[in-house]
Image (cartoon, rainbow, N blue to C red):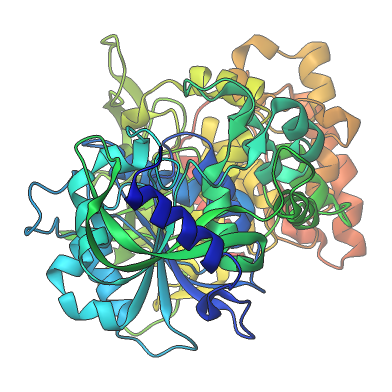
Length: 623
């Protein structure tokens, strides 16, 4: 026999399901929302983030905040939000790092930038009340309530967590990551839309994922990859519950709702109705039974992914982005700037930004001394395999010895041109020297990362291009940089990443790949040394689209400087000859025959002081 409490709760379900709460009926304006997420925990957060990003008709996204799914995981989840934004090609949405641990008690908040952001945005004017949706541990939501109790009158909280309402068995993941925070949320008296995981089931299978998501641009491919490879212990079919939570805000009419007193929670997160608090609105499930037919939310989700995928390329640049599997739009960047160091003739500032596939990009920004108030040209500077941002920005300029960070085995110092990004700054340029993925203190494992990208449906060159294009986005925001005069140059490893990155982005004003790797792929295969280049260099299927000369020709009349020593192992001289021969007519037709420059000194694979001076001449003329 049912207990009186359970009978009363089920009676409430029958009564209130007949009346959708007025708050939740689709409003004429979009929902102002902050989404708080443990994005990298498994696979369903990413589906929810994608739906929200692609639904401007439903949401005004004030920001995303990350929360832990266990101590020490918030940064990983923060980076995964940036990954989703980057793959989707979305710009301008703040991402804020949140709590990295659960509450220690019910009175002490875990103060973080995310909590401060939630409180700040709750006080900002906007169309409609702010909704803070949590799809992970409730730590940030509860901390905002504890830090500013007045937020209860300014915000509607929504939270996905817990087992089947009203009498499921406890132990649900979001609930147990911070049971104390869930108790604060339930007992605080705030306006709460509660979305139990156990009731709101959005079934997905690998078959349906492959059919609907694979091949729908980088975002669709990534979501499908998560379905194919996610290590979360869950058998098919999978419950993508977080998508239901976002869907409940966009389409409340698709869900059954009831109003109930908020229950207490026992040590396993079970609902205890013997002690209750203020009212909450509970989503008790989708109107259409998910096992009985198609769910409209899935149809809408798949349509959005398909519509957001880059369409049929209309030019060579867009076709290259498709080969690289990156979004053709200018990528977003949310850079963090550090301390400024003073050197003779220039300053150096630490800069880093989150990027796709779970990493930070570390860089140094160099500025010429005494150039305040001027709009300067800027150059992104990229090293070879053994280099990094440190060797490029050293104060001593010239041929010197350097051992790159990150090597697993000690190796003797390597002679190379050091300090050349700093020297460019002394000569009047703002320079941004990056450590590229897989080099230096980013693991010195570019080969391993390239192999992983290839089998996952992405490309190392595409990931490099995204990061370098983020660097370009960052430079365009600086007050002392002329956004119309930004170039890119790099040696060896940095040469090929310069080559593809500049070909993939029309915002660059000049390109200068140096030493090896650029000519024709046909000659490299026929008479070159293919084994010299690591996995990062190779792009699957590129010759089905074009060879390197076509990519240079498509950039005319952009000023282009190719430095190719005659005995460079990275590319046979015949390949460079053919590239210049095939690309030059495009520059003639564009009215800039002198903008394509081939510097062909004798010598091998080496960036020399003489080559640097030729590079400076090029930038002085064209930037």
